[in-house]
Length: 182
Image 1 (cartoon, rainbow, N blue to C red):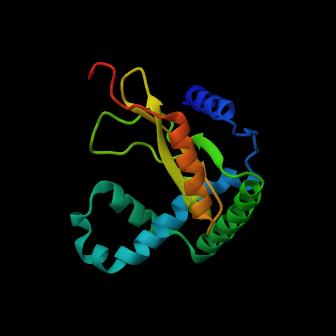
Image 2: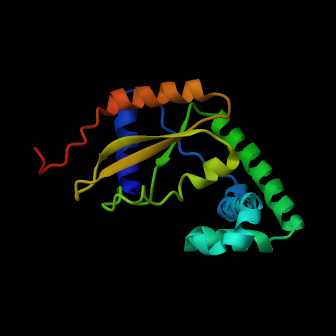
Image 3: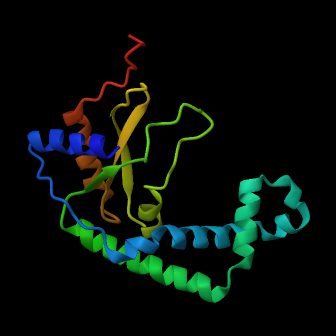
């Protein structure tokens, strides 16, 4: 995915984009744990009444998330929210210097299993930080499965992000027909 993303960046640069590497802020290091904690607490708060009487009707993953959320203290929840606010501020400051940030959409090609959309680990920090993102198809893996890039922009500046995404789509002209399908 790293090699693919670098190749996409090179194609965009050849078409006129100015590509510059940006460093992630220090607050990015806590993004996943804060997002998970907040998500679990909010799931527990939402489901608490039903869960008390109908826990056996929940699947194992959501049940685990709710149970973890029920164990988190108010102090820990508020601290996670403070860290998320700092992340949002730091990410916005980083993105403000460019039109959009380009990164892989996922750590691997799309899964063959149609019951999942894949690993969202690369989207979670941006969602947690409240920054808009868009994923674009950007090629095919050797397996014939789709690859994607993700672009991030500033909050409330989605129009600019969509404009950058459209330019990227037009520039990349991705053909997603698997090689053995034709």
